[in-house]
Picture 1 (cartoon, rainbow, N blue to C red):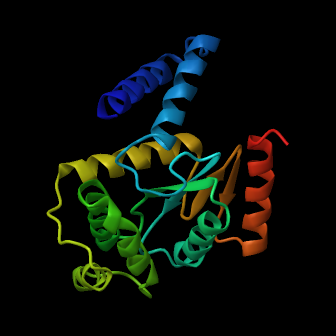
Picture 2: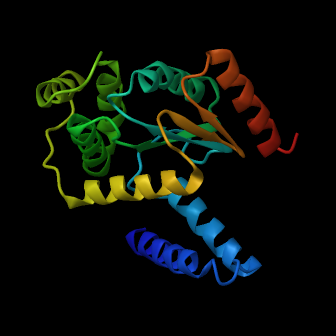
Picture 3: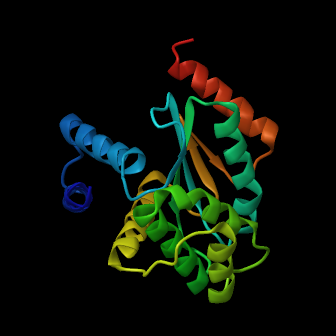
Length: 207
């Protein structure tokens, strides 16, 4: 995946610089779209909850310091429980300070090293009112039973990829959730979220 991301951003940067001289060819557009889709949906470094082989996969850009993300997150967990054909890929975007970065890196490292422990830690991190501190992150690890991890450069690489992807797909804040061909911005109501999921799930099933 790292090679794919490097290839993608090299290709995109090179094409962007040349765009003033000539527009993308249809083949180039297909390449770019395929690489974006691969990075969004199939990056093994991105945490995933719900169905292992999903009919519909949601992409959720989120921040552990974002109050609206904390409103939306339990609804996403409810979606994967209610609809077993659905998965959610979690893309942390640390927009809100140093502790956003620290909590995101902790979650990403836990996913990579102890994937079975990720969801409980994720839930505890999302339950914190206000901004995290190093102490509150450690407390979330302890309460969730997650193993302490040593942060390394791989988690930073994933965050960098997420930030680049967010720019490319037009995400400027959190939460932002891609559902099928639609992007939902902000913490919408349960009714709105479920309606969109049901519509896109039906479309994915060819109904």
